[in-house]
Image (cartoon, rainbow, N blue to C red; front, side, top):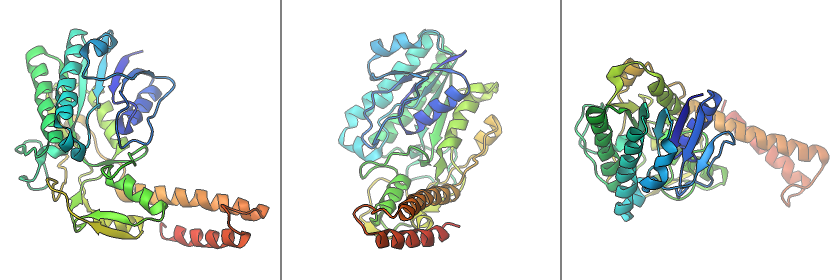
Length: 343
């Protein structure tokens, strides 16, 4: 059984990757200090082994790399706005931490490192669709440190022969997406606001567009990079996106809830759209799930669960959440009406 390390493996993308690796019968070690502020919870697979330590501490992490075949490096200070308040922390985690991962991998004979970077590398200067050969335009500590670590990966490949594959993710959504705080990703925030009866908060005019990418497709890109025999992929950067973009107001319309506008934020791109031709060619990867179909399925399942619960209460003639039986029947009717909005 091959052994792999997943840094950041208790978080959103990392935990989905861990589950896939366990399913595919790899021995999985997770390094995660579980510090991400926008995560309501951290996810553990009982078949993986977890180490709650910081990647900034080389002496603590290095022994874990013995006999490891592959490393997936996702641990990071991973939100733009918090890094504006803590730039030194961003540098220590995203740059020094990545150097520690690469050095521990090199010294222990790891075959390959898959590094998770960011589409924030493209900034404001580049026009869509965004491709990997475009100039960098890093506007904040998050993008500067994440993209700086791309160079470390390239250096470790060219100088030491450590195979590295670099990914730039575009607005990842899906199961276990962060929900906590004002800087959590917009898809999860909007769904939680709608479910709790609050208006969705649209930043700026809502016409800014994003390339929303399903977490399962991101996981698949990592798996394909681990298994590829294409030497042309080593030391290379790959966009991981859907190749389609939607405005924030498009997302509001998919969810079909109330919304309100809040002031725009500085330093954020107006439009993003990934050119995914390179990854499709080199890794034979393509996106499979769109934001619209995922949102519709998510909301249908949420409503169906509520309907099932209401029907059980009405059938038993029980009081529900302090309501009368008539109140339960009324909500049941409203939920069935909502269901029609999602096909």
